[in-house]
Image 1 (cartoon, one colour):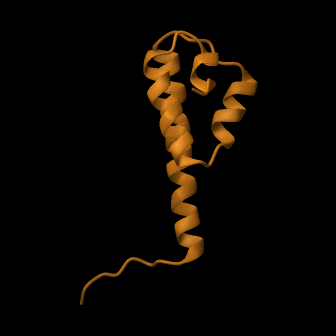
Image 2 (cartoon, rainbow, N blue to C red):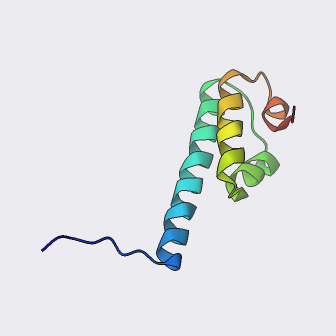
Length: 75
């Protein structure tokens, strides 16, 4: 008998929340590894974001940014 994954709105919401938390951790880890100081306000902003496209953009910028402010800049 094949195993089926339980799919429901609540289950997907929980999975997405876990993915967002992982993205936030990754962004903060990159900034820490690069020696960029992160304030509590910035940690909260990153940690509370649930927009996956925005988080992806922040992560990409974190790799090359010279300051936290550069991560949040819009072009």
